[in-house]
Length: 306
Figure (cartoon, rainbow, N blue to C red):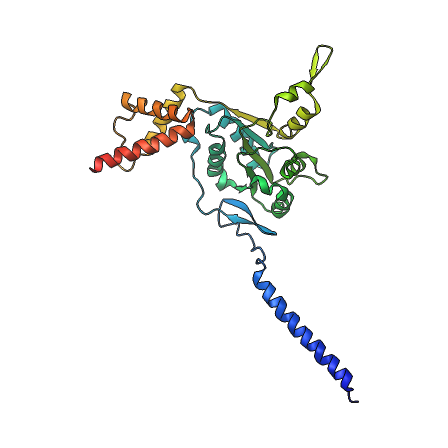
């Protein structure tokens, strides 16, 4: 049975529309991001959660900052607490999420990196998550929950302003979700603020006296509620002069190259220079000591080549 002229025309129009649609989709696909690649878990001991447009994925960090626990001085008590917790976690025992707070440059981030360096051979892995990506924490937990490794989700230099979405997302993952937290991951966060949010003088006016007791207002309670979800709080403090100079000595030794040794390792000249270096930066911290030692070792070695 032959098709009518009208039927043949309709088929031709439909075919033309399909060809145009296919061509349009091909062009659009060139602009769409590729599907996230499968995670190569053997590529590194540390990963970074990276968001690109509507897609996010774990990317291996190929140049991991290697720090030895023995190189961290002046924070012995803090090292003991966090390493004990980390060892429990790596061995599959109960352990807590950790909040490391205190003065800048005192070793909070370095301690986490050093623990990764020590326990990576026993299955510890680190996933760095930026504050802006904390809303993706449930997706990250879902991605790793069946893995045999022990994951620390690491949030560095964390602080929030009011009503930031990451604030509520972190609270939910720490303690507030109906879903059980993944047994193979913990959250380690560092911050200069103990309660992760700015505190204002006017909040003191919200405190109420009940008999001889003082009760904080709702604003203060809300700010404390996030930090309370971390089971382990570890505080870091500024170093005094002797502690600072001791750390300088350690880093001067660290920056030796072959048989080269920094001339007059801790002579009066070096001590004076180290103290002046700290004075110009307004801080006696481990970071400042490390920066001074790099500068001094570099200048000393350069002068030997002249």
